[in-house]
Length: 391
Image (cartoon, rainbow, N blue to C red; front, side):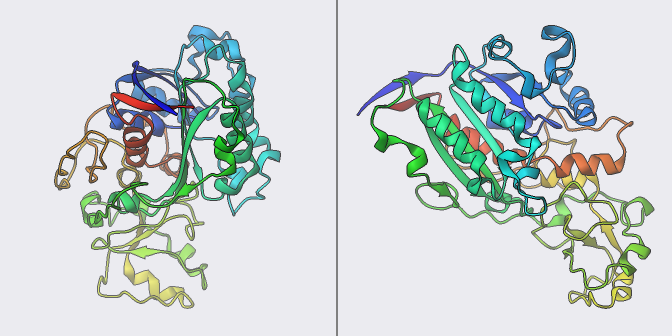
């Protein structure tokens, strides 16, 4: 096995299942030279937000296509036109979630991902880099095996992990699956022992090798908006609390350094298991009687605002309130960084036509931009020039 040094070309990325642009923001945070040249999604509200912030239409309708084109109808010729060397993907999670039927590759919502996997060898030049994000359980899915088998056949080097933003110093426990694949230049291997799918390892520590880093998240007070606690819009309605007999949900205070994962149901009357609820009164009360919901009413429980959730997901937003301390700079470009709340444009901002419920839903379907950025920077795009194993 020899090693060659390969100079990196600027990245031309396609963003599939783009939503509100979480992968696009993560790409910016990675600092890699390049651009997201186009994105694809069927969610019209998400596309509206994406257009508002990036000034470009998902699906690039006006340039390439005479009508709306969904991912599962894209041809190899359609994709080849972009001359992209990187794919960023965050496919629908419903086929793999515990709350769903877990139909996996038999779920219609997995069709688009399976189509992209199938189309890879049909491209004139398969992407050099592939990044995929999904939920816990994807790592045990048939869809993953189909993907890994295809990546093996095209001679990709693969890294997989299950990581939470807590491991990066962010006060949100959102465990997610990530895959990073980089194509080797020497073509498919004739040696079956090199097949990643037969010796796969899903990392659960950060970084994957060397000494594990440990960052303490900042207190939640650092992400909270001012003047929100008494706003009716964000209070948990008393009538919904009183109906929640023995439903144990996550109550946090502004001095805490952790929140649970926010889902697309957050902000609705189905608030249990949808994300953390903030306690704004009687802060000395830390023990809760969920069998007597009336005792929870005096605690001033409220939902996190969309802007607060966005900050916990590390989206770049306009600065407000006290800012986190700047991180210590790493000695080498590819070393892990301590978290710093992104505050540089392009910002995540919602058009006024998008309601609060829609904002919570879109954020619950999104991802953590900082985690994506660090995995791109430290793993997928490791150096400006890199050593690639030639088999």
